[in-house]
Length: 123
Figure 1 (cartoon, rainbow, N blue to C red):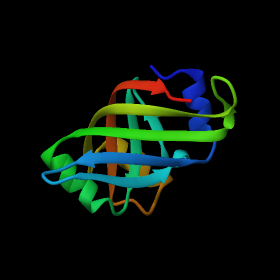
Figure 2 (tube, rainbow, N blue to C red):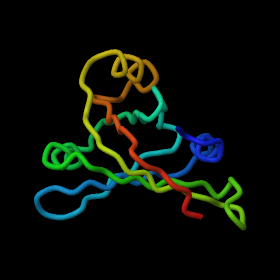
Figure 3 (spheres, helix red, strand yellow):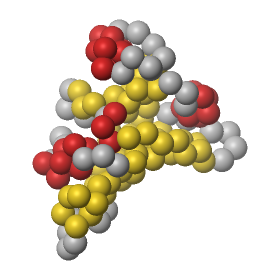
Figure 4 (spheres, rainbow, N blue to C red):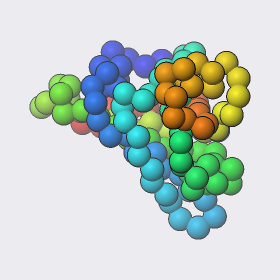
């Protein structure tokens, strides 16, 4: 599902913004490009140590949006590109993906699993 440009972006360090909406207003949490792990065809795993408000919002409304980018990857016209990702999310507390991520990121308490429904390059 993910093209070469997207994979190149996540191989470079940068900030990922995760947007969720609960009963009140939108909430944004952040992580790093290097923490994203692609599994299956359309799933992104993210280690979570805090993300308390994010988890509460996902329990209420599992739709999420993520933005990420890198100034080190060529965009449409200039250096620097980014992506907007939309999908659904859930937190994993056990299982094969949880165990695999725990080996990579010993600090995590849960894994945020994003099932991507769409993604597009924005720059």
